[in-house]
Length: 200
Image 1 (cartoon, rainbow, N blue to C red):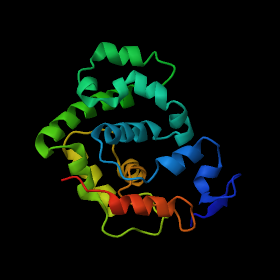
Image 2: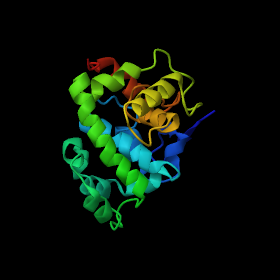
Image 3: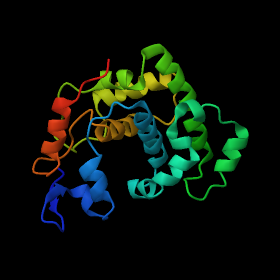
Image 4: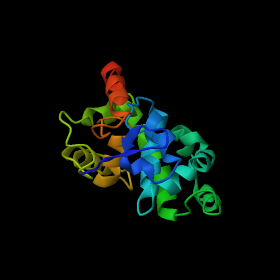
């Protein structure tokens, strides 16, 4: 079971953010807060797919480079990338140079455009998979919802979106409050989720 750590400021936080200093701002201001912005949702799902087999520290350190490389993850723009863009990105030392993952972002941008047309927004689609009941925070790496969402995304042609990747996305984008009990940010996320208007 995940526990808390006491940070240098004397506050109790989820233990995972105690390993490196740059995790604390991300933990305190982003992770778990509910998101309804389509660009941010698309970005996070892409970054989680890039993280597969790597550490989040690696991805977070390169996040601004990823944003520059992928037009701030505007999927309408990324959907127009072609083979020349893939070759260009494979030479970009600022990002993770993995052909399959780069190609997946472009493919998924095209699928995102289709989803917006069919569902109204990415947010409206993703928030249908908000769990009715949370498991004990940070004790699982998948859930029935992440398994179902991954299956539906794959059915719609998305790539690099397995249940574990999707669960990390659900955690980060605030579809659940997975901050542990005693974490200083848990109550802030709870308050944000209470005020949050679920997209439809």
